[in-house]
Image 1 (cartoon, rainbow, N blue to C red):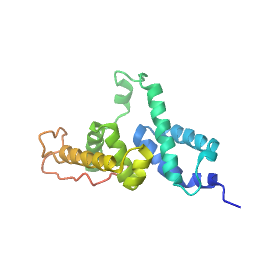
Image 2: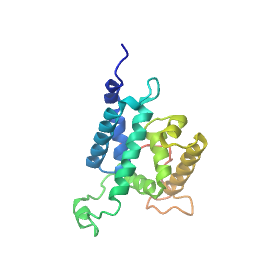
Image 3: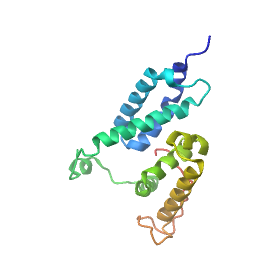
Image 4: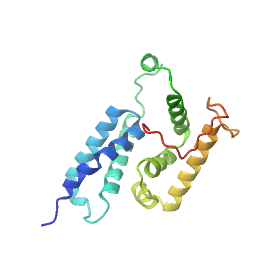
Length: 183
């Protein structure tokens, strides 16, 4: 008797949630997207080809679920003037928080394809081949996106480039290879 592929779904929930949180920047929405992804995977498990990469299959479903949600809700405005967000924010009181804030600000300037490639390769540990399969692009395209994204992050975070726009002093050196644990 062959094992039921549904048993493997639970193994990937943690990394799916991390990926969804990075995409959405909202833990509640990330949980909703992961739940929707698991529901879709559960009901469509017969479409999963035994012996293939379950993780890549799930991440593809998650990514498509996120984009479908984004398209559906892109015109919604919940806090147009930022009043609610302003009341909930706390000024950073630690260098690590400042660095994470600067990283998040720099990361937000990347185009969505570069963000996605960096998340899959840098944060999730996908190989270039797995990432390419997940997003439906060639391996060369993924490598190019990651390279351009890292170069842009280095430029913004080091403050050396003419395009550096963040508040970090030029004397502070941070490489794009550093990954904050909360991102």
